[in-house]
Amino acid sequence: MLRLENLVRTHGSGATEVHALRGIDLAVHPGELVAVMGPSGSGKSTLLTLAGGLDTPTSGRIVVEGVDITTAGRRKLAALRRRSIGYVFQDYNLIPALTAAENVALPLELDGTSARRARTAALAALEEIG
Image 1 (cartoon, helix red, strand yellow):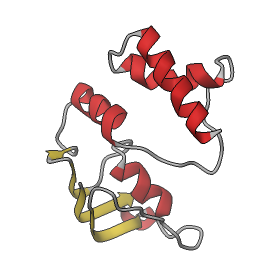
Image 2: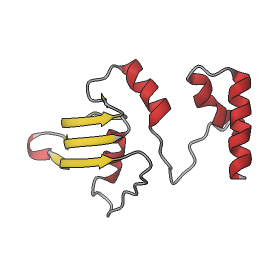
Image 3: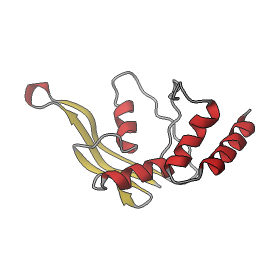
Image 4: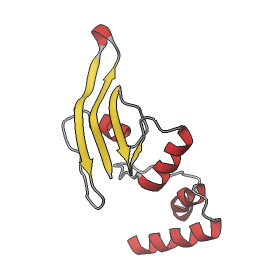
C-alpha cells in the first residue's frame, strides 16, 4: 500500500517560492492501477518522484508497505524501491550497452538473485509480453 499524508513540496524560498504540491492525501491499495493526469506544471512529476522516494517532501509523510520513506535510510529506501515501487515511463529508460534480457535481469541481481536465476526469470518475463 502507498499512502501520502498532507504532502507538501515547495521549491525555492521567499519571493521565488513555488508550491508544486499542497496538502496532498492519497491512498493506493494493492492491485489498484493509478494514472496521474493534468496540465503541464500541475505537479504530476513532483508527485511521482516523491511517491517513488526519488525526492523528499517539504513536509508530510510517504508510507510504502508500512515504511515511512521520508525517514528511511538510504539502503532501506533503495531496497524498498527495487522490490515495491515501479513506474511505466513514456520513454525507455534502459541501459543501452545491455540486451533486453540483461536490462530486465539487472534489478533482480541487484536484489541478490543469482545471475542464472535472474536471466531465467527475465527470459520468462520477456516471453510472456512478446
